[in-house]
Length: 273
Ligand code: AG3
Image 1 (cartoon, rainbow, N blue to C red):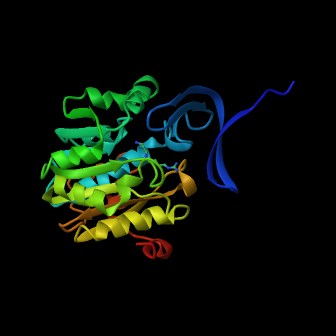
Image 2 (cartoon, rainbow, N blue to C red):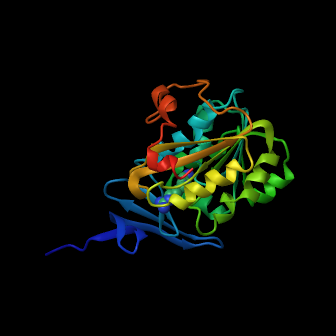
Image 3 (spheres, rainbow, N blue to C red):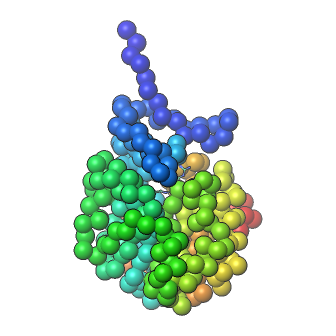
């Protein structure tokens, strides 16, 4: 007898998708903002999907979370002391800033259900929210930034893709609001998609930041479960963005060499920014 096989696929285009064979679907939920699914996969452990796109898996979340936190942390002259995370409702990004010793981390997630799902299925990531350095708010990040001017050293945009509900987090107005919420020498970092499959996302983030900040810098990382496995992040600041090596103790992905080389870019990526 042949057993039934179940698969979850993220569609990249009409002609291409990445499929994970799953043991089980653990959850499917429609919130006011998006659809959330959790699968138990054979190769990557539990997988969180939002609107059909992979947000994280137990096996490779460390790459994204280390790279969205440790690179910007080390690219500011002054060690960042106050960090605002927009999105990040799973707790993974906050967890990395706790490890870096940051004492004031404000995490503003718009969808309270993401936090609930993390509590149930990704307790290790969720546990960040019970750390006294972290303040979790269920709120609209844009409104929050407008109310908190000149407050943060570092803003981290840990959002979904630049198409759909997170679109508003990739335009010039958003970057202006971010600049308002940052201190003068503050820095913003955003995930900016796959340079190969989502070149527009990266171009949008880079050009948007360029029109608001004096300096921008793009870096990349290898994230096996995201489209093409090759992912970009974009930083903007009025201060100089370069490695200052505050804390380069190795993680599971990050190390000093990765920081040094993070913004070495292939030609096709340079052309997008
Ligand atoms: N947020 C960025 C995920 C983007 C993935 N895109 C895709 N699969 N098409 C990750 C949230 C983790 N804290």
